[in-house]
Length: 354
Ligand code: COI
Image (cartoon, rainbow, N blue to C red; front, side, top):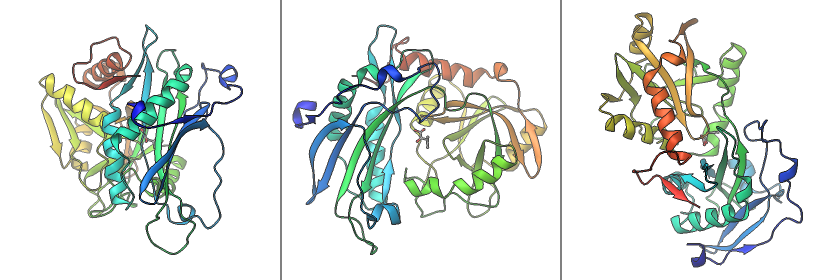
């Protein structure tokens, strides 16, 4: 694949790898040596290169700094016991990047270019894929506007970058989440389904308020009634009630999560009853009060399967059963990990060896 695109490689003089403590990696704070870069000018992607991970030079009038025309992805590479490198569902990320790009009026990144850039970067930085339990290499592809122009219009020039970070767990323990009924993350017809930078910026203030009240995350509700579950800031949400797996159906306000999709595929194969639709907050709370809410968890690339310990709603906290008792989410986490780390055969076509 990499042969189709001529990718120039300019390696660092000295790797930063020896200075990394792989036993203590706070998510998103350690960056690998290189990044893949491509530029979009005159209507086409060109100048493909792998170069040292380094500061970018932007003029103050750069549109990206003012209007946030930027979309991103998140995926991970895993080291198998044999030392091979496996990336989980990169094709799905490449497709979703373009779904986001279309909504933000940005050009497609051809899937072949996405994959060629990723493969070349993984070849150059393969030693950065950690091998300790529960670690991986987080991969962040993103595209952003490059025009120097402060009028409002879609940029004519863009940059596509992929960089990587060795990471451990995003959440080190089960999270306390608050059901948000005042602020809104996304509204019908908006950009909620896109992995667009601005969606995350707008979520910070309500999340900060929840953090001040002792919660790590929010459960966003629909913009119109605040009565239905949407997603969390960093993950999709799932609940097990009376043995049924329940999750909000994705639409224009919810990210079409790749981990979400993988969990649903496994649940379906295991014959679990799945309810994918509108999930009413009142049903979640009633089930919690009656002891029928067996499991609640988030799904996401960074978060993987993040257990929810407590749900806060209208000033009251609802504690969920101990994580050890949660049959489905423990099983699905183990199965996904076994596939990602090569301990179980991948019969879904999810793994791409690099
Ligand atoms: C991911 O899970 O990859 C995400 O993009 C969530 C995040 C904002 C860290």
